[in-house]
Amino acid sequence: MKDKLSYRQLYGEIETLNTSVFDSLMNEDFEGLQHTIDEFADSGIMEQEEFAAAREAYRYSSMPFTFDGIWISVDSCNPLDRLVMDVAGPSIQEIQKRDVMPVYACMVKHTEPQEMKHNDSRIASSRCNALQHYKELYKDLYKDPSPKGTWSIPLVADAEKHKMVYINRVTELAAARSKFYATYDFTSLPLNGMKIIDSEKLRNMDTSEKIKYLTATFDNIYDPAKNRNRFNHTDCFSFNSYGKILVSNYLQGKGIDRKNWKRYTKGCLPNNPMFYLQLAFYLTIPSSDEIEKFMNLHGYSIKSPMTLFRDVSAGKYHILHKDLCRWIDAGIDYNLINEMCGLKLELKEIRKK
Image (cartoon, rainbow, N blue to C red; front, top):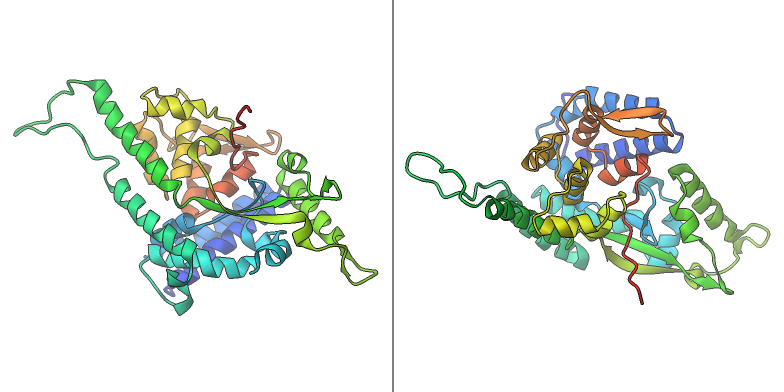
């Protein structure tokens, strides 16, 4: 690819890639999925000078649509589209233009076209400010806390204190990330004593079943004989506003006990590489090289050409860490990667009454 793409065009290319990968996931076509990523890599888009910045901005600006906290799909394939319009007002595309694109523009320090400015969106303005704070914290993540002598770096006198400096930085980063890691969340309300969507049933479905179930349910709301809806969407669905995703809930959704996070913040390092990888995903560390640096900080790696990341499609396919790194660097959404692996966006803590 010789033509230089604008940041807006690069956003479109990355979004199109994610849509194609999602389509392959819907059809359980993992060969097609790999082919899509190969084509993207071979196109030369990833060699564009601004690609790395665009990929980072794409990930940080994202605001997933959820139903009772359940991740639904990439936005261009979202069966919630009509529901979003009827219950929340604007369409998914309009919400993206209003709340997501300004944050993307802020990240790439680019304000063209005019509608990408964040002054008109309260949530975008708030997220931009939180994002800038996060980026400042991230700069110091790997800074050596050891006092430096004239000739050499001395041995660490207190290993626990040394370790806690890094842990406290990660903890502060996670708190800062939660300030702008938000979703558009919708929920089902009882209609005549029953909910239209069974959330627990939905939560336990695979991706293909989930989308078919939602699409069929929303289609059933329309009465073709009368050429109108059987009832108003606002009677049975509500918009829960912007839901923040906490790191403990995010990890629990990956089958990692939330207590591991609490232990980590106190200095007890979990003996589980998936904990650190999913923590890197939560922090939205934007490239495989940067994630490798984060993993190395904790004594692990994702760069081995032989190690396994995850089995998918009932064990039929094996995703190696080298595959994962390609997906990360191409710009595949981390929520989509986890969806491929049957992992949930989050599981909130149910407190005893």
